[in-house]
Amino acid sequence: MAQDRHESWRSLPMATGSGLTLGPPDTSDIPLLVPPPLSNKEATFYYAGIPSGPRLVARSGTTKWKPPTGWDEYRKELRPVGNHPLKEVWEGNLALKLHTLLDSMNVKWTSTDVVRTRIVEEFSAPVIVWIGVMPASLCGTDGVVVASKCRDLLGEYNIADVDVEIRESVATRSAGPKLLKSSRFFNPTEHISEPLTATLGLHICAQSTPWIEGTGGFFIAENGNADRLLLVTARHVVLTPDNDENKHFEHTDDSEPRYNIMLFGNAAYNTYLESIKAKIKEKAFMAEYNQEHIESAERMDDPEANEKRQVVQDELAGAIKAMETLNTFYQDVSTNWATPESRVLGHVTLSPPINFGAGSSSEGYTEDWAVIEIDPSKVDATNFSGNVINLATQISIGEFIRMMNPEFREDHPFQYPFSGLLELKGTIPDEEMRHPIALSQDNDPFLTVLKRGNTTGLTVGCANDVFSYARYYHDDGTAETSKEWAILPFDFKSGAFLDKGDSGSVIVDCLGRIGGLLTGGAGAATNPEIDIAYATPINFLLQRMQDNGLREPTIL
Image (cartoon, rainbow, N blue to C red; front, side):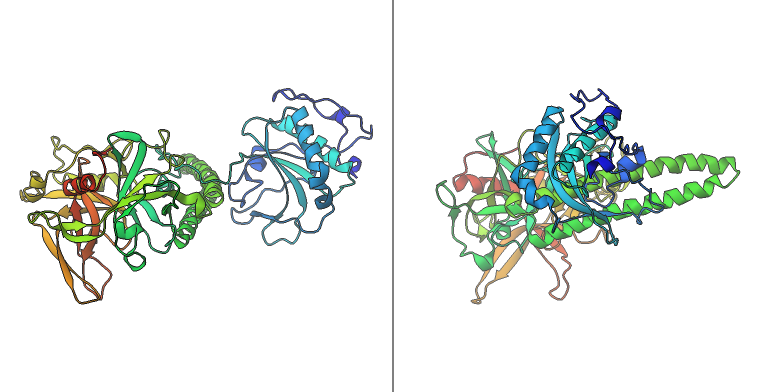
């Protein structure tokens, strides 16, 4: 029974640091055991292995926690309850009584769960009542009081084999969350979270064809009204040729079903989760390596080794902090972005048929674009600050500066942004596409461009100043020709500028001026690598949007 395992309220410390209203209940005076005080290490690592790695505040159990001797040795997991007497009374009135009890003590609780927990590969998986509280709202001393009182409540129902554990946790609704704000300034998730931010290079697909992915290009507004945010991409990304009749598409009646666009196809979403887990394992390996390094240095009577130990201790602390942050991020992604509905970004509002050789006789470009109206619940003023490309994820700062400014000239117009976010502003004039102003190391006209795509991420290339023509053959034997703005690899070491899945990316120069929308490329049929990328010039594209009914499209 509960009286056999817990100290009476009369002997529990009555702390007031959390502002709780705590008083002794009318229970037995039999002295009970006091749960051992938590060390910072226990609070931090007690739930190691559980996706978010929540911080333990207090627990009613009296078994002493044994710290792990290796980072991979101790991993907890959650399991379903299964057969247990608690199931029969939980939804009846026990849960309601528990909530009333917590409220009476002014506990800022966020969730109450009944689960089994166990150390991975161990058989024992005891049932616990798992209470979530707002971060930093309950101190450890008061937490012991709360946990013990809740444990006494279980005793009233003759539940003697269930403990109460309290952790810091925030409950979220199951509806699709907003895109994240781009992380900066040494946040451990700054690279891995990028696909879920409003920076350009969004991984998108139609909800009806989640196996075909492309890239969200750039944001625009109609008549300068930023309250209705629109995203431009290639039509063949969202209205795929194999599943679409290539007819004019326009959504004007809100009573009709929407053609939804979402972030990540199903396979891509699972791959993304695996990439987060891989990052966590990498940090765990570094933590273990640093711990071994510290222990080795401590056995050496050497001032230099001691100095090195101090450095490695800081690295260890950083690795542990990164693991905690990444675990929390993994929990967020795996919980709040798991369903296709939660990843719906918006719906297609306008897209003319794909057309080759579109426009006047002097233009003749590929017309392959679609406009997506963004759901305001996904992007708003808190997470959107205009069209930006994250430069700080794949290419080192020094290497990127070298590619933009090979001579490292002080008067070069490109300055690496402190935030790592390149703001897009303006467009590259058609004339400059054909007659670049910038020069290469060899003093030849050279327009350096970049893009961020779904498949290859951030890549740098060289815009060819002579436009290409591409011919597209259809199944019936007919063919169409289109003029293309051609993008070449930056150099032989940089690799291809694009790959499948990058269609829809926006191409910009080092000043953030938009040049065009990526639609395809050319390469050997026997090799997936693409030699030359093809894009539709931005000024032609904006004019065609206006011709198709979009009023004064404005790049944000």
